[in-house]
Length: 473
Image 1 (cartoon, helix red, strand yellow):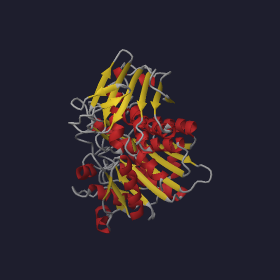
Image 2 (cartoon, rainbow, N blue to C red):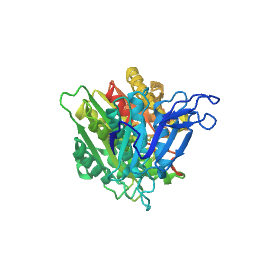
Image 3 (cartoon, rainbow, N blue to C red):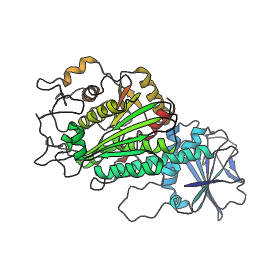
Image 4 (cartoon, rainbow, N blue to C red):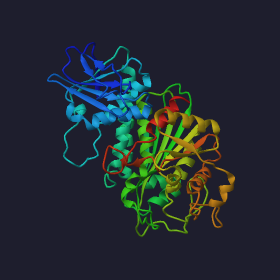
């Protein structure tokens, strides 16, 4: 999407978007803009309200922001306008930027408008959103310079839109090989290196836990490694994202909710989207990211409950539940990243446990780390943009949940309590006591219900959070 500044709206013909902060319901002073006057009896800028004034030449959409508005709400407001009022848009659309808007608010406006073009009907015949027309240019009217913030907003939305597609497309489309090819294409376009290990290469490398999970699937597993290496990088950050492209549960087959298990690669998709955004923004930080991608399916070769498997780190693992598979591929991803690349900070993202959903519902992700400074920075980065995190403990008293009599560790406690914590303790076992590691369990926030579709769909949680965190380390 391209943008252009207009110096005056006197001769503008098209749709004009006017954000309005709340005044007062009984105010005798109407809201006025460019000769259009709106009485407070019908509109006074309350949050989530709109007022449309139409003439032959112009359509004015007044958008209520309330008395104050946070980043996420502002972004959602403009996404809603773009998505639900698209019949009012044509090739001429202009957004008015209030003088008091900060750079982050400007970013949220343009990001939201671009996100509003998303349509979940990937395999339906639908009309293209007007904003996506080849010759469309979004114009803006502002007393201040907004272009840099607007372009940043577009880049954020673009990465999130790509993540939407990865998570929402069906599993017969988004296979491990599809993710590997997507990463390679993105790397070529945005400037980062990509290597993908197939089953043969992963076997030679010793990624035994990763390979065990994919044994029951005809889909070739792909261990995807991405490296973004700008000159004079300030720090080196490592990312790992769970890439289970579909999760049947394995031989411990799921008895409910399997239809939504295409989303079990949302952590991997967030890492892929974040790598695109980090490179697109040209952040001065070295980032190495790994997405172990495979399908947890069922056939004669599937790994079994009570199997003992090996891992890249050299630790043996007793399999208690084949549906606790995400932690197995993350274990190899974390161990491989830390041993071979030695990043200063490591963050993994995964739709890992229903326990995290039981604790926080669908509003917040679970954060695990023993590094208080890292915890604070991650939470602050998330709060700024509305991707919330809250820390849960990694106390040693939970070690007993993963102790095995036959192997070094077991992959599931077998208990109906503290599931997210015991999963995090399992991952911690494979981090080689890294001093700055964090695990984000995003099971409740990566895929869900909202006003933009009738069925559950992707949120792209983590893409902006990780990028914002890295930018402000």
